[in-house]
Length: 387
Image 1 (tube, one colour):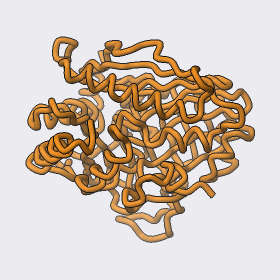
Image 2: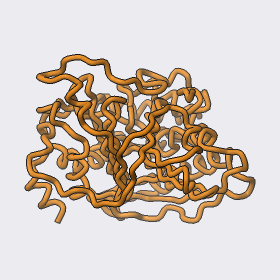
Image 3: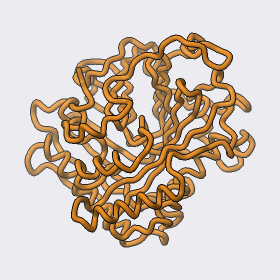
């Protein structure tokens, strides 16, 4: 069995909160006006760019399955819960056009944050104290936004995905819809956690965010280089000696409403290293934890008041037959929490000694604003922003 401790190398037992271990199916209970049987009528589905997978065959929390056969959708919570779903039918088809009124998102004013402005900026100052004490060089501080769904029984993440594809297109966009297994995710992630082609593995850490390239500071470049070193070290644990390289460092990428600094780290997996070893060496992703990773995770555990869930985890697909894969870092990600009938979304920022608390808060607002507008806005408004 693939446990939370195995996923992170067992370095931060205190970090495992509510979601450790494999996900469990929801108990049958009555929600507002419906039962979970209604929700479970949504057919299992995974969608990644032009690929759509249906005909669910198997669900497991064992990463060794990813080295077997078949096409797998993968959702790994930041806290360590892993869901691997094998589908029998995989085909290419475009993301459907949004149907007006089908997705009923939360009202814009209903979003609440696990950390308000005062708590978040205080957390930034506390991380700077840890940096001054030599305990950490960088740590990622996140908050989870939540809002009630106006019609939970009708909420389908694939409808939200259709809106995101028009309002906030992203290179690693995807959907995993497994209501019976507690997984309902729609991501517009711009960041590559891991890709694989045979024995070649690659990661694309993002550090540095601004509205334009002129907004990027020296602090952003230094932070990116720091996380690249962390990712190199992580991959070096499971790659052959001397094979880990950095083909691209601090490239500027444009995404809807903002720009990022993105680097590429590549290596060749050692003989005998499979998905279990690769995930254990690299998870959680370095760009959403900090450096050193073990110290950053302890600080995150102390300062954050809500589990991140799929936010900052890993979301994507593995084709075990072709030995190819693409997993995104679960940023710019929505998920439905059926236990509370709410939609959740995470946002955060990397904190270094050079961080200004108010600027970091503003960065979390920038990262969230467009996506929350897509999830909460009317279809006509989304159509205008997409043009």
